[in-house]
Image (cartoon, rainbow, N blue to C red):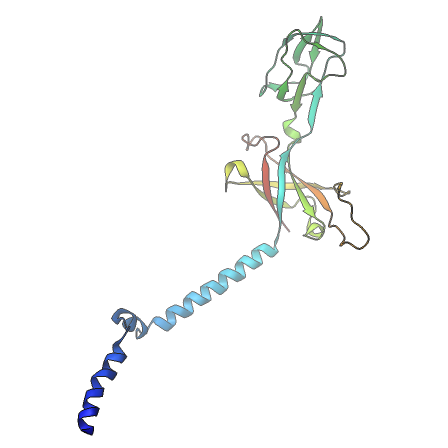
Length: 229
């Protein structure tokens, strides 16, 4: 009987040993290169992580940035009806070019620039306090980032290389150079009590770029910046 019982239990143990065991997995586990492969993958991950951290430590990342240029507002020197506009949005304007006729007086541009808005309302009365043309000067274009004072501001100085992207053009990278770092923080409307945590302030960092190389960049476009330390 005992011999019979032992003989009956033997197949059960064999069946349990085989339950859930995939032959392919078993062969992979026994492969002589498995350990080496795992070590290579782990080592590659460690190296990639180190390089990423090292790369990020050499840059100041600026999340909030935009393409910006001062707006040039032009109006007539005398009051009168708008008789004719000689320019329209998108036109390039040279210094001394005529822009509009108001009454019997021609309005000229005092500088070169690109027209971004016109008050094209023939017959409407206008005067010296009104704006009839707005322009931007291409040479004044900058990519302007807002850097929090505790997020790398101390490492930024004029002349450093800047890589930036613009939301409108996805991952395409542009190159510029730091032109200036603001001496005064941006104003804030937030009021904190004495017991509250001090608010980190933001400073504007302006970077020049070649507007002729990047004619697609427009005033007001949202951007992100990486400033190389």
